Figure (cartoon, rainbow, N blue to C red):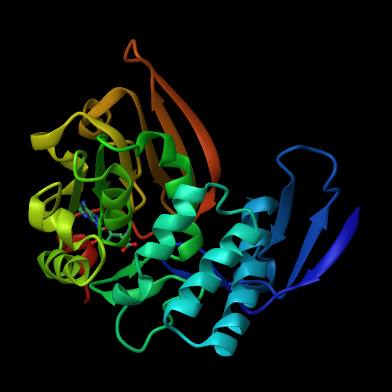
Length: 298
Ligand code: SAH
């Protein structure tokens, strides 16, 4: 099959907005199970050539268009929130009932800056050169980590930003579990605590099974290690050793790796301590870096 799809001028990836080509060529979708798509970016940035997974990118594009339309139809509030989750399910980003339930329960509207689009599939700037990730990336990471987020389990969210995903983790592991969020911008950590306090995850913060800390996430958070699930919300140039050390045998880490070209890596630690890595998809995140680097020019 060969098809040409017209796109909107802006693709929402993760962490940042970037311009997209207006035309996208899809090649022979039946030729491989991973269904790769060649995305010719030369129209706007020289001769760059990206490969991204069709099932991730095209789905997200459709979802972006659809959810924008939907939001205009339904406005914000619970109907927008339900519509967002319904669309993520429709386009196959969410396949599990628990992930759907948690993303519907934790209102993204409480985590985005006032006046911004809470339920549209786009990252939103939150200040300090950071963004709240797009709903499809939150959903993707929750899906990838779902098996390590059962009641009683432990999770670490590095680069916790607004606290949205940290709050989702807390709802999934429950009061008997332990969730730690770490971000190196104190103002963002304060904001994430206020966001959580307004949300259905507030009781976990109050009772202490969820905590948010200021720190360099590249060092992890030793106090509650080892973790069943580690999520890194910013792109590292290499996997930080402390995070590998703090991953429980049988645990899973999801981390974007790379600088300009980035891939979402899924790292499973086997019971014998050995590591298995696979690439989930191409992504675009803000860098996992030092505070000074991040705030440069801010
Ligand atoms: N996942 C979050 C935020 C994603 S943006 C959300 O959706 O709300 C990436 C976040 O990583 C930013 O908040 C940034 O401040 C943080 N960050 C970048 N480098 C870091 C580091 N070395 N240690 C801790 N946090 C870091």
